[in-house]
Image (cartoon, rainbow, N blue to C red):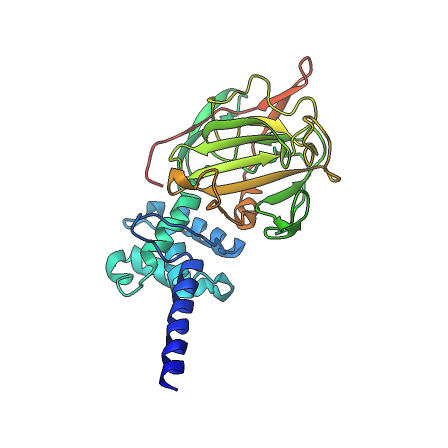
Length: 330
């Protein structure tokens, strides 16, 4: 009986350890995060961003990632428990001058969620300058604070989507869908969600013509796939190029699901958008890749789209207004 009890306790303890690792809250001696589930809802993300923006005139500013990390620690990452009052009460304490460290001192996983959500969202909100026409029609640069990332689909082009992260895919082998599909017509301009460097460009039998862009802080790898047959990329785009958020980088298509290059193997025309978090370079191109659910992010970005113009001679689209990000910590 005693042996059985010891065995039961041992199995129970092992199960707890495994659960903690699966929850992504276990950081071993290597010192970097191995797993992230990004379950932040669209409502919570929008509320956090709005509170951040609204606080910029306050003496004590609120950071949207800090708000989300606090709630992540409070809810154990389960944002089905989200209550706006939980967020606003915490934000009010910060604005009143209370110290964040003391407010989160008893939250064991606040640091983890700060790092995890920071890797996913750093740079999405901050200072930037954007070109706009003045009353005389002349282009002027206007300084702003707000959302700096763009929807991957250019302004005025129709699109639709739903939260399909984790859905089953069977081409090649049975697997989970580790991205977000956005339905749009062939030739719809695809724009860079955030600024970064083109890390890969070319054919992949699963993604077809695809582009991989690494963020400036190297934590995010954006994957744009199933691009248009024959003319998938923006003219002149090459590996190593730096692109700005809102730049046209390619065009929606349905290539992929074939080892033969330039094949339309996808039934429905759409953009596959993926976001991989990279805490250590050993995770890139490995069995330990961390891909997150993008639905809340793309839902937020639907209200921030890049305007584009068409060159009738080349039939290429380019961004209409210039854009420049300011270097800051947000």
